[in-house]
Amino acid sequence: MQDDLKEKYSLNKFSLSKVPYLEMKFNDHTVFLSDRTYQERKEKLLEAMKQKGVDLVFIYADREHGSNFEYLTGFIPRFEEALLAIDANGMAALFLGNENLKMAKYSRLQSELVHVPYFSLPNQPMENEKSFKDIIGDAINFTEKNIGVVGWKVFTGQYEDNQQLFDVPYFIIEALKALAQENSAQVFNAGNMFIGENGGIRTVNNADEIRYYEFGSSLASDCVLETINHIEIGKTETELASYLSRFGQPHNVTTICATGERFTNAVIYPRNKAVKLGDKFSITTGYKGGLTSRSGYVVREADELPNEVQDYLERVAIPYYSAVVAWLETIRIGMTGGELYQVIETVLPKDQYHWHLNPGHYVSDEEWLSSPIYSGSNTVLKSGMLFQVDIIPSVPNYGGASAETGIALADEELRKEIETHYPELWERFSRRRNYMEQVLNIKLHPEVLPLSDTVGYFRPFLLNKEKALLFRQGDQGDQGDGSPGNSQSNEAAI
Picture (tube, one colour):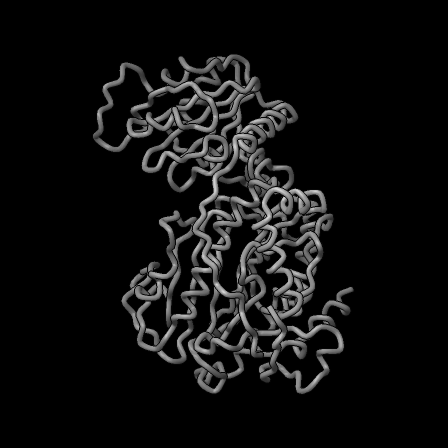
């Protein structure tokens, strides 16, 4: 199998070619989830609690770490902290600070409101008559309950009791543990119920949720494509970064728009730095549903690259892109995360290209939810899962290569539901699949639905708006001069 993969995705089957890209059509119709979806989410949580013997869960939220909370309520507490408590019968309580009390009546989950001044901003009124512990204890019955605490991550290390590691502020955990001790209860990390790579309730999505997340994923893609189309010598990072935000939608990652060396003076945001010929360039933006990332060099042709990286295309960009194509053509329902990992290890060996993280992960409200794609993973990929291809080669002395985007997996039943209830979304999926198969020559399994227009489209020379890397299937690899970097053309209709 390994030899077959190496042959199928051998580097001589890739070239820098004339490749059209899909016309940008910014979708400004923001999407809202249905009441039915929120009810389904609640039912999924209650079923998971039943299966795991959990009597009560506390779900923490702040601006950075609010997605598990938002999954049920529809909102995050912005600049305050918050807790949501739900018992095994579905009774819920919202613990909110001063400036989020008004949100209780808008919550998509019917809940009792409990005011917690401790969750408010510094020096705001805290004229409450109870301690934090007593506010929680008076609102919730802790007696002999198994109590799960949900922050924003799961721990999978080998040297700790992962159920006793908590990514929630200490004053909250201290109070919960004290109440548990007083009431013969126990407290543990229950993040796995939400985002665990094997069975987390947020890892599988319905048609409504796929529609919701496609909006953000496609928006990120359009923003990045518009930005790279505006890259010119002399423009600044800040000028270009202005294209990476749209419609006032919240980002789920730190925006990257960096030319030349990154992180000078420890700055991680776009700078007033002008683009120069031959610069390395990185660009990323993300919204709910995933991010889009691209990196390459600010050149038109290879001879404009710095002398020391004249072979960038053959050394980095084409090997990387071959792995992306292999990932996209391989991923399917029913395979394991470990099998997909091994495909990437075969096509782009880690010891040669020095990638270190998971070569793909779940996406949701967060850019990185969790990942079943690692060596030895037995997690089976299922219909309704959303993934991002995320392979990061690191070849010494060369700039990076990136074509990070996302896909959904949908079985025949789910595809039919999308086609029936969301025909405009289905048309976008169909148009993208046709483009990838007819223009980019990337053959997808029927269940793979591209979440944006730039899935599989990689332009490593950023000043050349006509050329992108192209894969030639089968015997096509032997047509003409197929050596890496030689210009071919694909004028297939979009």
